[in-house]
Length: 248
Image 1 (cartoon, rainbow, N blue to C red):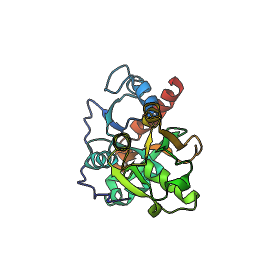
Image 2 (image 1 turned 60 degrees about the vertical axis):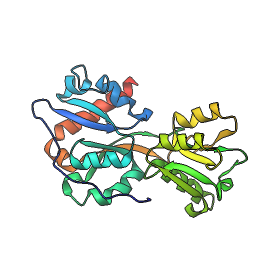
Image 3 (image 1 turned 45 degrees about the horizontal axis):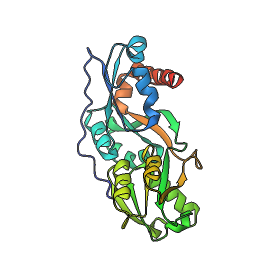
């Protein structure tokens, strides 16, 4: 991880026992569709599976920047933290400093199967072709883990490439699309990795998790104190998301 900032501040989570609204952080990623389906949208509402069957509301809170999502979780503004297993490994050392925010991963949402990938230009036709090239990617994200895994598998080191870090995967894709002179590749995820080659005939997907379908696992974590205080809500959340998977 590059320049992973310290958690801004830790507080107790916010919870209104009358309204019972669980705030669920998520990013723009198709794997969260089961949660949205079960909830009948992103806002807290009475048509939600979570409300009808399990007696609590869910509000989905969009946070594409992993560090912003982590800090909102630590401050108690949201009860869950979206991420991948590799991201959780990066965040755990800071989050376990306070026992309240120790992450409890209770459910895997999906495997990335073609959702993450590397888009390149021109004559880069294999991972070895990335040597010395400049790659845009989101810092402290699955993109970093994916790129590192590919480089190591090809007998290379992370230092063999130049990196341009952005806060989100979408910014990495935009940087690549907007600077053909200085950026040779980007690591991002769907839909951008598929849209870029449609717009730029010189760009193509070098590799995607369609080839490495058991590399990136999407999960979410719940604060340890919330799990302790509301095991019934946690159980209902997991069960409702499984129902959402069936719906999708």
